[in-house]
Image (cartoon, rainbow, N blue to C red; front, side, top):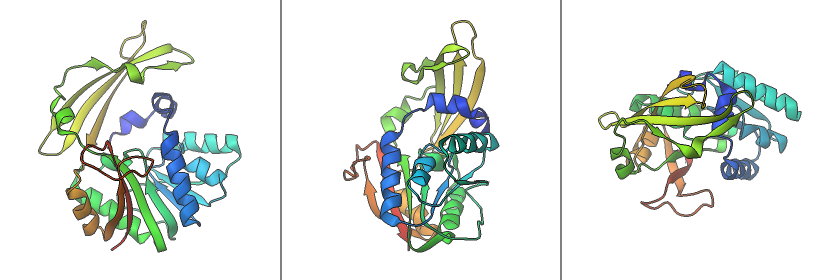
Length: 250
């Protein structure tokens, strides 16, 4: 887990403001499945609040209380009712089932150990109603990019954003890749021209390779029924940036 990185929910939303294609995809999946929706690792509700606004009963589970508080504020602002629950996606019991369970925006990759991933899949499966599906997206690991994670601090211009109090915030990232653990270990530095490194936060993200993913799911009692390579539902290929998986109980 990388709790420190998610301790400032508004910083997170400014850093990652997009995701409209992903939100539209999950809204379409909710409409296709109908019924109740559960998002694991729901963050500040960027994807779940629009689904709730479409009329679906929704619940969001999130480990970070700060992220949940911001999600509640945003839902209240839009006049949307969502049930927010603090919990760990590895082990939870909500006492009910859902017609769609989804895990968006690489949230699954905060689970680094294979057993943690399997535990998450098992918990998700227990919450699937008859005919329900688990849907999630994770990046497709690029070995060349992983090999370039050399620990050198570099500016990520594409991640710069405007803070209403501080002005333009620049983001530097230094990463190394732990091949044995399949984890990219990073440190993110947030600075302005007048205030260097006002936030320094670790962020460790696992890689799940395409061949191991079905095996992990199988141990969790699930199987992949469809795997896409982008939000337009293009077929998954070796050079796809995304693994977008539709799963059902095995």
